[in-house]
Amino acid sequence: MRLPGAPVPIGPGPRVADTRAAFAVDAGPATGWIRRPAGGPHGADPAPPVPAQPAPPAGPPVPAPTASQEPEGPGHWRPWRFRMSNDVWGTPAVAGDLLYVTSFEVHALDVGTGRRQFKTRDVAWSMVVADGRIHASDGPSLYALDALDGSERWRLRTDAWVYCLRVDRGTVVTGTRGGGVQGWEAANGARLWEITGAQTDFETPEGGPVIHGDTVYVWQDARLRALDARTGTERWSYPIGDAASCGGVPVRVTPAEDGYVYVAAGTRVLSVDTRSGHVRWHFEAPAVFLSPPAFAPGPAVTGGGVYLADYLGTVYALDATTGKDRWRIATESRQSTEPVLVADGNVHVAGGSAVYTLDAVTGTPKWRFPAGGPIIGAPVVADGRLHFGSADHVLYTLDASGGQLRWKLTTGGEITGSLVARAGVVYACSKDRCVYALDAVKGTATGRGGAGGR
Image 1 (cartoon, rainbow, N blue to C red):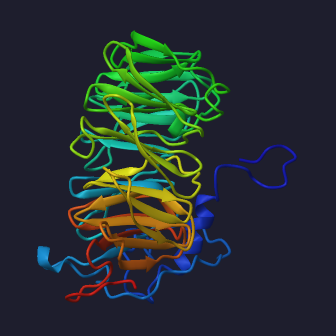
Image 2 (cartoon, rainbow, N blue to C red; image 1 turned 90 degrees about the vertical axis):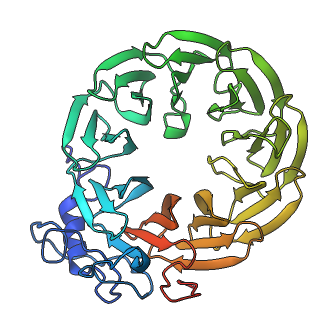
């Protein structure tokens, strides 16, 4: 939009026509490793001609099928890359045979071939795929699309900008600027309830309301409140404090399968019974926590363990039953709001520009792997391999136990959000406007024993 007297247009990003035209110039034909969007002669949708702009650098040439090649069967699947006409952001979502990514539109790509099944004209600053629907918001409106064909199920205007969107068990919960929290019926968009006066200091997805099962957790009037997800009725509340008493960081909530919710509030960690609101234990640390607690059921620690890292990089292992400090190990300072990752008896911590792995029971350091830039998002572990992206434009895959580099791939931009690993495939979005699907074992390699992308 253009304001009176403003020399240039303002808005959340570049004009769609500009970005489409720029990328129609070069869609990566030199690599032979590209999925062109359906539409115009270069795969982009037709747009009025505008002066061409340089496209971001593409990744290195790698062997893979062109868009015209069809896979010959499960044994012939190959890595693919799909270039968008516009920027992509956030973490991709996988449901069934489709991969969903957010750009200035919502795109659904076939996980096997990378071919786009559909796209919408709707911006999705927030998106959750659940129960056969794409639930999303462009800010002032909330809508749901059919996850298989992209057709609209329902759409409504909200009273304020949606900054947080969660879905669970047929209930959509939104946080809106100005302290609003709403509950919606996922099937038809009917408003179930609404409250006002929630915290406004941290209007980000990390600081918004949390839904788990039939309970919504809201930070309101310096208290942590547990609300019924369908009615908004308060079940219990606990005086957690305001932003100043919580160290100037948002309260982070992790509901766990043991019937307790674990809360990080500044330097404090609490274990609260999800039904009664009774506080089981309270732990105090010397530095504030930016990320939520991570709960891991036994046998790593008897009765389960709660793992956190403060902003200085100290990793804590607390007994889930008693809150006793089992061990603490110093790593490097971290600004990440992502939780530590606990998998297969290991604790993986993305701190600064390196990933640290510790033994979950003893805290003994096992390995450290330095990247070329800050770690983006949260690492993911699947089938004994650890995958993560970095601000150095590289995707890394390591042996989760020993830390050895298995393969890496340089993209044309920073990785956005976290990676997703499903059924032997790693999916990632990059600021080079590409979506990547890589073999979890070999990267981009298709030959036996390869380590693609090195």
